[in-house]
Length: 278
Ligand code: SAM
Image (cartoon, rainbow, N blue to C red; front, side):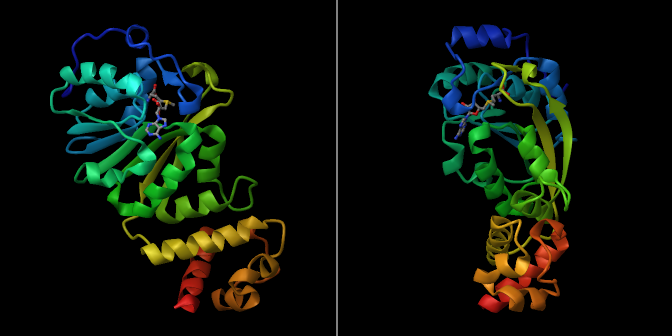
C-alpha cells in the first residue's frame, strides 16, 4: 500500500486515551471497524494524484483508511478540539500527508484547502450534512467526487426519482449538478454509539458542465416555490415567481404537481425564471 501506516493503537484505545466520549451535539457516531472505513475509502476510486478533504475525522478511523490509500494528502476538518491531539499523533505517522484543519466546516470554503483534483470523503455530522452538501453542489466541478455518509433518509432524498415521496428540492439540486447513487447502507450497530437511524453512503460525481451561480440561485428559488407547496398544482405553487407565465415559457402544464417534474424540466424552469429576472 502506498500510504501504509505502522501498527497503531486500536481506535477504542485512542478514544479512551484522549477522552473522546461521543458528544451528541456534534453528531458524533464513530466508525470503529477498519474494514468498513476501507470500503468507504475505496468508493473514492483510484486516489492516485488526488487530494482528499475529510469533514469530521473524529477518532480517525476513516482518516487512517484514507492515509493508507494512494491519495496525495488528506485535509481533515474537525471542530472538536478534543480530537486534535489524537489527530496530531496520527499525523506523526503520515508526515506531510495528514493536514489537520481546526475549524467549523460550515465556515470554510473547502476548495481553498487544496488544489485539484480533489474529493470529499466523509462520514458527515448529520446535523449539518444538508447545508454542507448544498454548498459543495454550488461549487460543482471544483470537486471530482463526493463520497458522503448521511442518515439513510437523506441519502435517499439525494438520489430519489421523480414521483417518489423522497423526491424534492435536494434530489433536483443534486442530480442537476451530479450523477448520484447510493453505494452502501449501514445499520445503526456499525457506529459507536449507534444512531437511531440507518445510514447510507451516497456517491456524487459532479457533471463537467455546471450552472452559473445565478442559474443555481434561480434553481434554488424555483424548487423552493414548487416543493414548498408540493400538493398544490404548479400554477398555484409557482404564483410568486410568475405562475402560468413562467410555466408557459418553460412549456410545462400548470395542472402538474412538483413531484412529477423531471430534473430536465426543472432545469428549463430555472432557465426561464432567470431569463425573466434579467
Ligand atoms: N469520521 C469519524 C468516524 O467515521 O468515526 C467521525 C464521524 S462523526 C459522524 C462526525 C464528526 O464531525 C465528529 O468528529 C464531529 O466532531 C465532527 N463535526 C461536527 N460538526 C462539525 C463541523 N461543523 N465542522 C467540522 N467537524 C464537525
